[in-house]
Length: 79
Image (cartoon, rainbow, N blue to C red; front, top):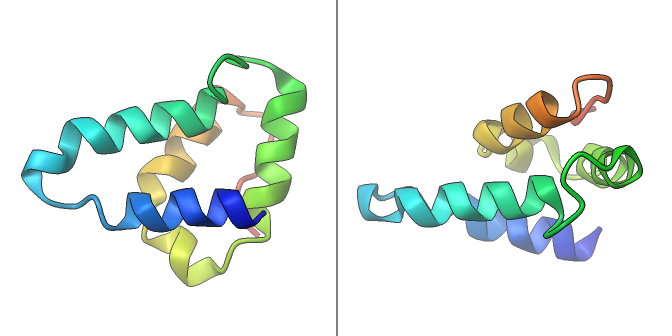
C-alpha cells in the first residue's frame, strides 16, 4: 500500500497546467499497472490498495478514481 500511496501523493501535486501530460501518464500507468491493462486480478489488487488510502488524499485524485472505475467498472476504488 505504501508505494500506491507514494504514487498518489506525487499525482496530487501535479496540478499545474504544464503538468497535465505527466498527470495523465501517471494515471494511465497506475490504472494499467504498466502492462496489466484490463487484468481483473490487477484491478482487484489496485481497488483493495486504493480503498485503504486516506479518504482526504483520495478526494484530491478523483481523476485517478474515475479512470480506475472506468477501466474496472465492477470494482470499487473508494471506501
